[in-house]
Amino acid sequence: MAFVMVGLKRSKTGRWAARKEIPADVRTAYGKREEKKSWPAELTAGQAKAELASWLIPIEERIAALRSSQTQVLLTLSQR
Image (spheres, rainbow, N blue to C red):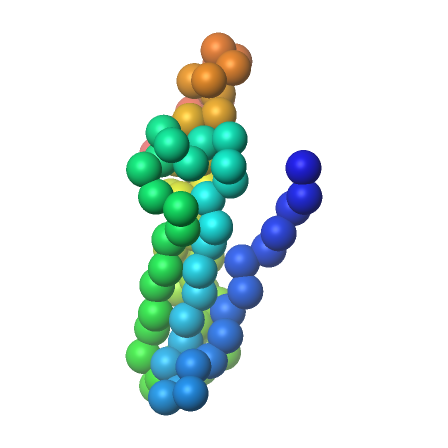
């Protein structure tokens, strides 16, 4: 399985944009092929990276939960 990082790019209008492709093994359970998000152009690169990380965490957690439910492996939950 290949590991692909989510990239943060600027569009032609200056907005920050990112997309996360949902892995094929959980795509049907997830219900989407990809997730997309954009942020305003006024953000600095550091702010945009922070926004990307906060957007990406719940998506990755959902993918991990779907994978563990398919394989019947217990998932360790955080305090949150």
